[in-house]
Amino acid sequence: MESMSWDYILKYVLIGDSAVGKSSLLIRLTDNRFDLTEPTLGVEFGSRIVNVGEGENGKRVKVQCWDTAGTESFRSITRSYFRGAAGALLVYDVTRRDSFDHVTSWLEDLRKHADENVSIILVANKTDLCSSTPPPLPQISYGQAISLTAEPDEPSSQSTNLDSSTITHADGGGGRPLRPRAVTTLEGALYAKEHGLLYVETSAKEGWGVVDAFEWTAREVLDRVGKAELERKKAGGVKLNKQTDQKGGCC
Image 1 (cartoon, one colour):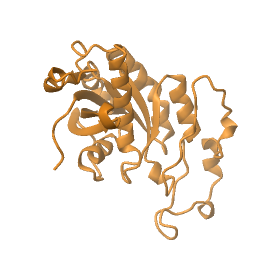
Image 2: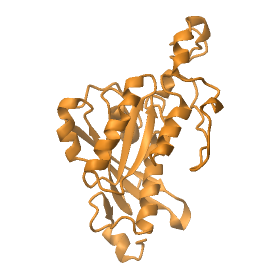
Image 3: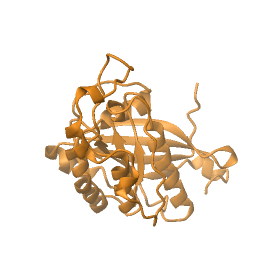
């Protein structure tokens, strides 16, 4: 049985449009399973301990995650959970262009109501609908000039030119047909770079990239704690295990 000890507790929020898979991502993280969910009313909660780093420098981080409703009618309730969050997953559906177009509005809301140093990762979810294997992420360095033509896939306008004979199947034959992407990998990654976000592509159904999304964000949070960009005692989203602190484990 996994030890329940931890070094830090981090508060996370899951935000984005309705039906982009936020609740499914949380279920995959906490229960390691996929389940079709009803729309979230207000907020839901889940937690899991994740390992960040290795060896003596590794930390056990308890992620306490608030899954927020994506509908406009719950927007005021959603905003109230932004305060004190150490990390945020900003989720969109790669098959729905509108959910990506609304990312900017969610990001503005988050940065207005959350703490200044909240670590944000842009999550391109439902990639299993478009690929039978996890899509590779582009290697993008800050300050690096990249042409949109560098990606093998053309922008989303290509979807109008596809017919059933050009679309492969997830099981290699007569199963569920794969959909064309409405938002390319490179477009999502470049948006994240432009706005100073982390970026990951996930499938809650297959489990691709889900733990990475939480671990990468936690690693950035702990790096900022180590650099004193966050003050543990004042930032409600970051809590240190008192026993660890007494043993000299504080960074």
